[in-house]
Image (tube, rainbow, N blue to C red; front, side, top):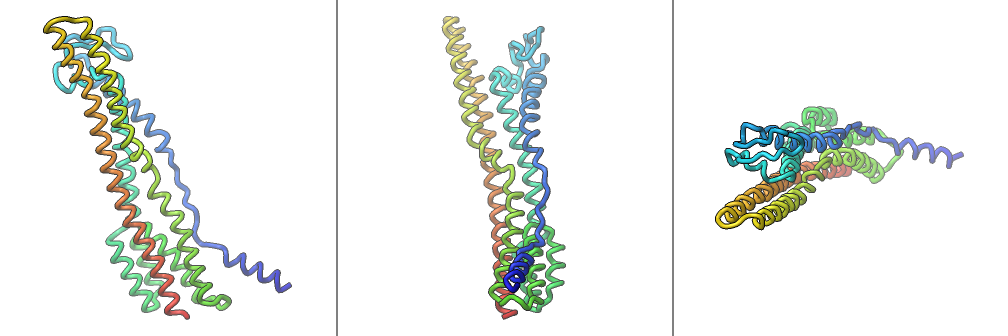
Length: 287
């Protein structure tokens, strides 16, 4: 009978107030497709508009053979079918930069994380648990959410007469770990798009350049004299647009990825510091 009561008690202690967050990641499914289609539309109908060429293709179609670009902007059209893919990749990066910026900004909460942790430490030292919880509500970030979950368990453990101090500290620590496990995936979600495109965009740009060079040297064999030199220089210039777009997109993705990982590291450090604050405070005040 005693063994049965012990098991039931353990089951009650294992429960947690931390609830899994329901979040949809539909943007990661829709955005890449929409951005690639938008990239083609920009290449075909904006850059490749008939008004941008002296000899537009009257038949149109999926890939019109427009000739005589009037500006450097319209000359990008001659870079080939790789150009809309690169434009699409740039739009994907831009989309997830905006999405991550909004998410990380929300996760950072209001005010300085370090200042927030110091305020909670001050309230805990005075045993003002409710004031510390109110501070978490004002912070409204991931650190505040984790701290709030830990404080609720902290408050519950104060009135628990069945467990010793070490067991109470472990219960608080477990609550913090569970809350952290729910917050971190939200912060790191979709960063894989930035890291992947940072590597792939340059390679796709080089692929477009190689294809353009093959086409340029192929046209060289069909021409002669000064016309051949002009066609070759024109083909090389068109091919290098792919490299420029690929490198530019990759650089933008790398810079954005590093900025977000730095901000996420700061939030993660704040979460770790808040967990350490709670466990150490309880261990010293409620022996």
